[in-house]
Length: 78
Image 1 (cartoon, helix red, strand yellow):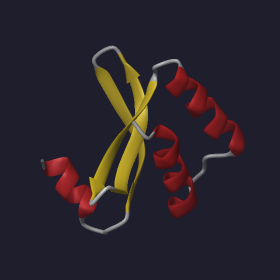
Image 2 (cartoon, helix red, strand yellow):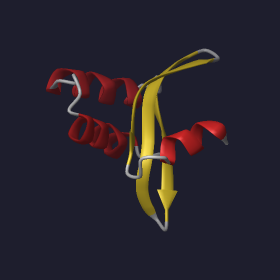
Image 3 (cartoon, helix red, strand yellow):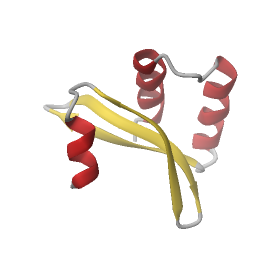
């Protein structure tokens, strides 16, 4: 999984509210097996993804990024 690259893209491309402290906290949660990412690849390149927190059977997605505007709409429907 590419958790850190997904988190980096979300922060960079979305201009989001994630501070350095939040970034570090999500990275720690990932190390602990609580935070996860879902990635979309095309021709070996990361072109979209999202990250979130998993607690039991529930996954709560926090933020996502697409390289192509329609990509995440397609992703959610597949």
